[in-house]
Image 1 (tube, rainbow, N blue to C red):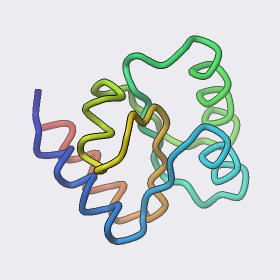
Image 2: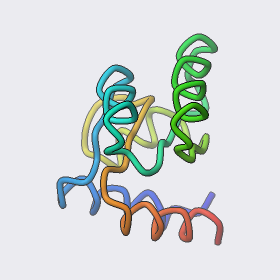
Image 3: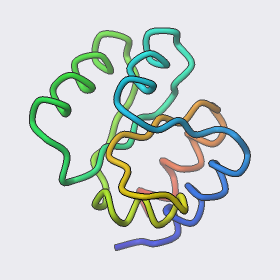
Image 4: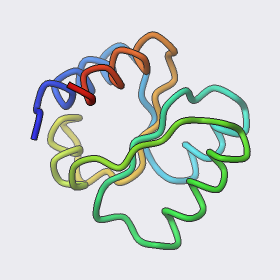
Length: 100
């Protein structure tokens, strides 16, 4: 797996451009403050459906990458399953790094 995007995710967190948690991310999507959603590979079906339905309604791109443990390590926090990127430039750069 390409670890470069995980390092960049940590940088985005330090810059204040990351929100975590299902409810916070869904609220951010509703408020049009989230530009990219990253879902852990080990997320539950119900959470996946709830978040992706909201993304599709508000036309927010989402991706399913890494496990919650790997994402949590990149952020320096415990397990994280739903991540929202709140800065458009960070979102574009992160998508480019994921697609390498």
